[in-house]
Image 1 (spheres, rainbow, N blue to C red):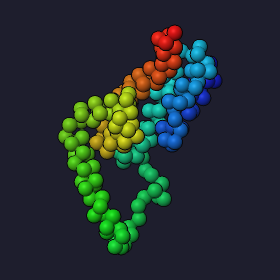
Image 2 (cartoon, one colour):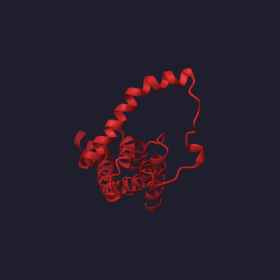
Image 3 (cartoon, rainbow, N blue to C red):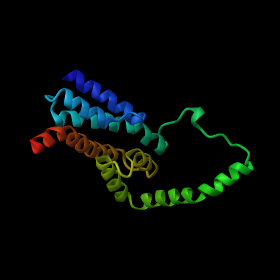
Image 4 (cartoon, one colour):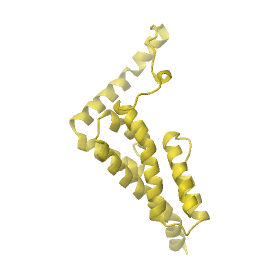
Length: 169
């Protein structure tokens, strides 16, 4: 059981860094294979690993973590193509700037949005993680809201096969 929880933590951490890995599918497969694992323990381990992985994105967005030099944009001359692209994305950049400004003015909105995203997944958890860093959300709030929301999400997910089988039978 301990080995399964450690593997679950590794999968959850990797899925936090590389969003191509589905933690939800892994949790369902693990609980189906080993139903004796306590759902709350599995939910807490996966939530902790996910928040720890997302902490890197949060710190990078906040400016506390220095990114490698190859990830920094280099100034390029404005070609016609790049100029057209800037004109097309001007509206989106303006929207993002206004959203970031509102998050600075109303930090409790960001906490609520981030908490809901941690449970439901809408808006995308990755996006709210970065936005929380840009809005300079306190790290304690980031960790507490993220852990609570993710713990609830993955605990309910781990409980769902047993709940559904009891309901259907």
